[in-house]
Image 1 (cartoon, rainbow, N blue to C red):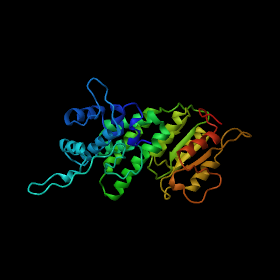
Image 2 (image 1 turned 90 degrees about the horizontal axis):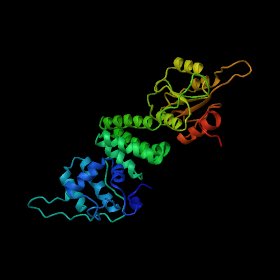
Image 3 (image 1 turned 120 degrees about the horizontal axis):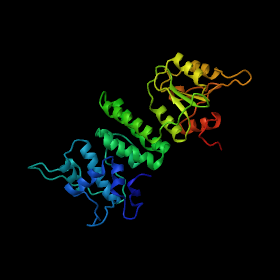
Image 4 (image 1 turned 135 degrees about the horizontal axis):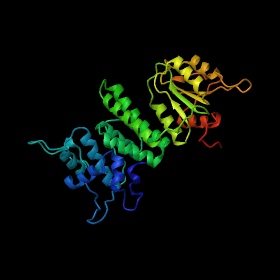
Length: 335
């Protein structure tokens, strides 16, 4: 899934646009590398559309990895063409080091991105490379394409989240380095989610979902993907974002009468079970037809023993299913 083995899924290989999305670069960059450095498809003939095979893709991945670490493009292209390490360049007066063989057709690329990504889709590697280069245009292009190709939920779980997690791990182990990468990538992810699924209108009355981070919690990105997934399904919601103070949160619930409330906590130090229980106990409506919201405790901060009366979905899919089954919200088909 997403590896170079899939490069032949179209007859003759991938198109230039598909290759560019996997690498996290613009199509014009791929064409420029072909024109300037001879990194075009091995089987391309004049007058035909370019089709890229697994070995072509592996060579371009090597080019991306080298330029991301600061190797000049011309040198990186020479190394990528010959399938060797830059350390193998001969030193004057010393014997040449042995050259590494070119990658076998169909072999999985091991070209480093500077981030530990593990076994992920090629689009995830492309997104990571674009983020490391601080290339906003390429980041947006990869994000928009992967959301269009795979849908919001799959794009988040299989491409966006692994890339963000790898950047976070790099940040944790590198002091203040890579903070700029994480901030830029997060900002563009939020923009891509909102472009892909504009919120459904939420009227002053009627069942809606209310989303908010608990007081002291600033990690809003998981709520953004949940909000986008709700919007994709036509579910009306209100997202109050980061660090919602207690009194405004309670007032927002009282004024809007939501069918469901999702409270996000990244850390156990911010998760407040008394607050969640209080929201779950709130009532509104005429006597004899009083209603209470279904409260979903979202995020790793709520780990530990389950709290009676509160739902704790394990992930994005479970949260959406819970809203479907117990929130009775419009826009989601109930099976």
